[in-house]
Length: 231
Image (tube, rainbow, N blue to C red; front, side, top):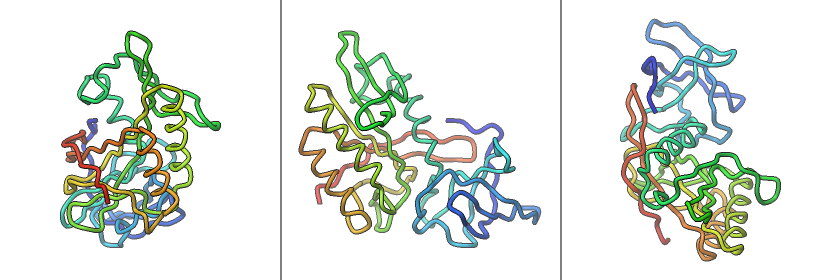
């Protein structure tokens, strides 16, 4: 996913009301940016952090995409993973899903939900795919999700399990918008219910996948696979 024009750096002054952040641009101008993230952004909202901005598409002049950490950029735009995965599916770059040439987004299923992608092969076999954005890392090399209570995400895992019970394939893909993580696990201390839903879904046959990302002011792309930890 390319950025045109390239992202510009700024200094985070404060994040507030979940979807807003005040930033200082390189020329000293203070502006308000949209933050497409309803979570806590745990560890990524410290004043003084370097952030990277794209021009806004709504009422605000800027949209906050990345926060720099000592070891990686961290992507906080929760809309980005679906775009990244859509590009990768179209290009057949994700091996577990390469046999499914037909891709539909936002298909109704489960308890009044919409699955991120419904994949179908030429024989009509289906794979239900949910995408989650991951930006939390509290230990070296370890990515975690979620960073706060995520009841909706737990429900999605239960709905994927129901699709497996019905005879389809189902998978969750955790897009780790970081470059410093090689392992992933649920953050059980932050949301025990999600961690339990994750374990139950995995036991039911829902496939769990994770990918890191490579990021720059010009683009973000899916990169190496990230191992799903068993602990």
